[in-house]
Length: 486
Image (tube, rainbow, N blue to C red; front, side):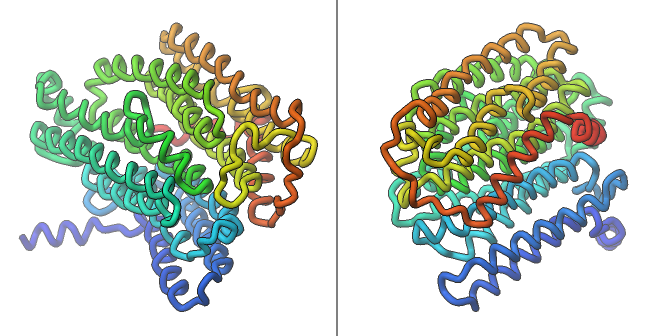
C-alpha cells in the first residue's frame, strides 16, 4: 500500500491538468461571486467567464509541442487535447457572448448559467485529455450533468422542461451502454489505461476476436455515437435542440459534440486499433445513414432550430467519414472540421438569437420573411454562415469537407466520398430556402425589437471572420490539426 501511495504521489504532475484546474477554479469562484451579487446582475459574471476562458486558453497553448502526462497515466496534455481544448473554449466563449442579453430578454438573468457552461467545458477537456477509461467517463459525466441542467434551464417553459428531461433520460440510458462496454473491455484486458489496453491486444491478438471484447467495443461505440447524434442514436436531438435555450443549442452542437469525437478517437485509435476493420465497416454504414437521414428530414422542417438540429446530424455524418478513412488527412480533417463547424454553426445561431422574440415562437421560415430587406447586414452575415454550412467556397465548411472527403478518397472509400458530396448537394435546398424567405418574401415584421448589443455583435463578427479566414487560408489551421493527430 505504501508503494502504491508513493507511486501515485510521484506521478501527479498537475501540469497535465492545469487548464482544467484553472477553469474549474474560476467556475467555483463565480458561483460564490454570484451568490453575493444583486439578483439579476449577470454582466460581471459573464465578463469573468470570458476572462476564465482566455486564461485557460493561454495555459493550454503554452504546452503546445510540450506534452505533459500525469496522475499515473490517467491524463495527458498533448497537442491533440490542446487542439480540442481550444475548440471547447471558443464554443463556450461565443455562447457566453450571445447569452447575457438573451437571458434578460427571456426573463432568466441567472449567473449560475455561466458557471454551468464552464463546468461542462471542464468535462469536455477531461474527455479530450483522458488516457484512461475512468477519466474519460468522469469527464463525460461532468459534461453531461451540466448540460442536463442547461437544456432545461427555462423552468417555466414546457419545451425547455421536455428538452431537459428527454436529454437526461436518454443520456443516462446511453451512459449505461458506455459504462458496460468499458467494464467488458476491462474484463478482457485487465486494465482501464488506453495504452495498456492497446498493448494487451497487440500482445494477444486472439483476444480481438473474443465476443466479450467485441461486445465491449460495440457498447462503447453506442454510448459515444449517442453524444455525437449519429443515426439511429439521434432521436433526442431535434426535440432537445428545439426546446433548449438557443445559445445552449448552439453550444451543444459544437463543444460537447467535439468532446465525444475526441474521446472516441482516443479510445478507438489507441486502444482498439486492432479492431479497426470491424469498427470501420460499422462507421461506414452509420456515416451514410446519418448523412442521408439528417439531410432528408431537414428538408421538411419549418422551425429553424429544428432544421439546424437535423443539419447537425448530417454534419456529424460528414465528420464520421474522416474517422472511417482513419488516415492522416482524414483525421486532421475531422479536427479542422470541428473548429470550422463551431464558428459557422454558432454564428448562425447567434443571428437567430437576435431574430427571436421572447418565447422564440417566431424562429420559423415565415418568421424570417423579408429579414434581408429590414436588416440587410445581419442577413448577409447569416447567409455567410449558411453558405459555409452548405460547403460553398471560399468558406471554412468547404475546406473542411474537402479535407474529409479527400481523406476518404485517399483511403479508397470512393463511394463514401461520392455519397458525402451528394448529401452536401441535398443540403443546399433547405439552407437556400432560408435565404429565399429572407430575400424573396414580403416582410411580415419590421424586426424593430432587434438590438445589436456588444456581446452578440462580437460573437457574430468573430464567427464570420473565422469562417472566411479558414476558407480562404485553410493551410495554417490544417497544419496545426496535422500536428495534433494521435
